[in-house]
Length: 319
Image 1 (cartoon, rainbow, N blue to C red):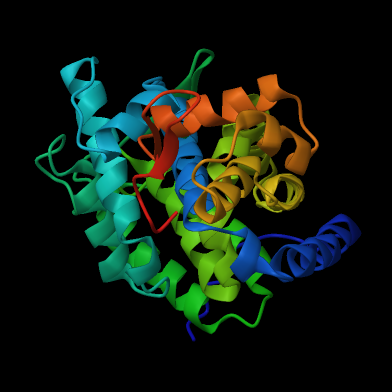
Image 2: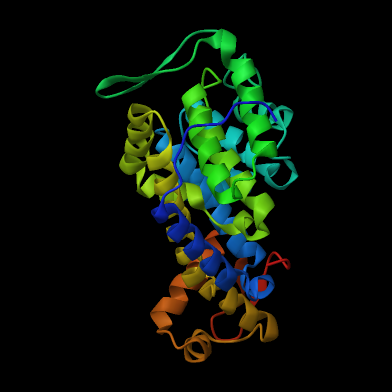
């Protein structure tokens, strides 16, 4: 391993958060094969795509992204649609990327930006500053040193003995600090941290960390700025560990998915009534009607025949 080591300090807060993350992951992984269904994975992936785009100012939203995944045309500016298509393409390969491979990261950037940048998949060839409403907050390293910095970062990622939770956060920050591309750095940085975590614990393919970052966007940027001012990424590591913990806790609470339970009962009894479903799931008929409406909207379920004599048909048997 080379001499490069990103500057950061391990704190008691990091250790406490890492322990809590491990405990919550164990809860989520217990019975994950039963509760983390294809439907839940799809929903969380859509949350991830919407979250990472909204951080960058693209508000196409979950409904339109769902429609595009289903091959439908949606209203939006040309740029917005290309950005959505880009994140869809980049995340399609989520489980296939080697997180230690710089070539795979370049491939992800090419998938993300191929219809937007002529330099997609290549490092920037100009010097840049990262700005906010208050002006330039960070002057990125000169473009000429970017390739070497990225090689050093991947060597550290591959060879460091640090816990992978910490490594994923450090990589995310250092990547944003280097700012290796002319555009798309935020989306790739968040994607790559999720990929690193996925290769540690597979359940991360169903945890929408990016949507929680979106909900804490101001704190996300402040953690980046505080780390830059401090000269080490300690504040950013602590922030991201908090985000990961909150995301996992939210996933544990939502893992017993009502829509999946509705589909489970419908598979067993296609002529089941809304009242019967409400009694089985201990929910109001109105709540069941809302779940049914969502499933219809997502083209997962449809009603065949009349309300009294008809039956439910599941359109995707993998659900």
